Length: 111
Length: 309
Image (tube, rainbow over all chains, first blue to last red; front, side, top):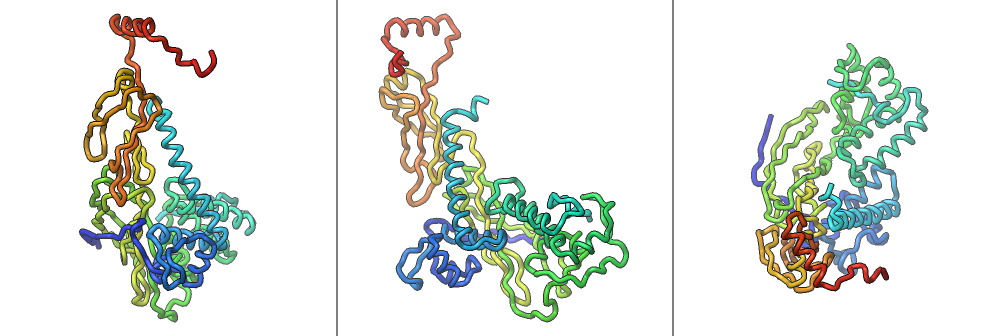
């Protein structure tokens, strides 16, 4: 049985999307205790002082989701997941720099 | 349906110890985890590894799998031997087993833990897929058709697959790795629970001329020696069409010029960064050779002065 749904409008999780503590918790399938630990661990950086005031960007939603998956699938604790995410972010930055430098050097034009 | 060689999937021998299996699984899980891996097909591999591990890590399931015999080859057409729906008293976590193959189901069934007893409403799992789009689509926005096979769990716990097509609008200005959330388009819920969400992760395909960093795009711009020396107005490509750019006199290779707001749209919009590269015309005619000789005679120029030679 095939089914087509047309014109689906998704929500872009970017810097401009702002979600509350409760929304982030539900979006990453965690509970409020785990999200508070993610903030304590420095994995998430909400705006606002108290949890009731916390505001997270769409980028943080993705970080929280990745942290949850890494913990579950690779049997990591929160600190381990935070370390993995920081290293992965760094790796991603370096890969981007590398592709730009390769372009500057003309590596992928002359070959 | 195809026979699956779970030992081969985990890269272990058929007589491997439980410790060997665990070690190999852990290593492969780190390598192919979709949040970590840059391998193509990481998602598929990760599922296969988990399915193999689900069977081999448990001595009882492993014994049941082994009892099929060891003459099967991976990919060989497999028909369950008569009475082999027989291992159906195994129980699995519903969330995990939904993704497993038909081969797995034919041996172990789809009997989920607490089947028949657990009537709690459960939300379906979130799903995540990568969506490759061109830089032009990221700049202009686009509508993309996404075809999905959606697993569904029937009342008896059996699985069926349903084809579904979504036409999704990609907003202008998406950048590498950003996610688009489609609420309620993930795995179906159980016992009347809500469906999970579907996340599309943007993967920008490489562009012939531009490289991308966040919302900024960069272009290597070839210019003639006289354009660099005397200054010039040249036509340069941008994602929104060609524009005129002033090259200041005395420019050199490696210098960067910035076209504000000509990168990917957003608040603020990205820039287009132009990396100047002086290209010399070939000396392949007498006239060209003469022109170069005249330059050599008339210009006092040592390009290696800074090297002290």
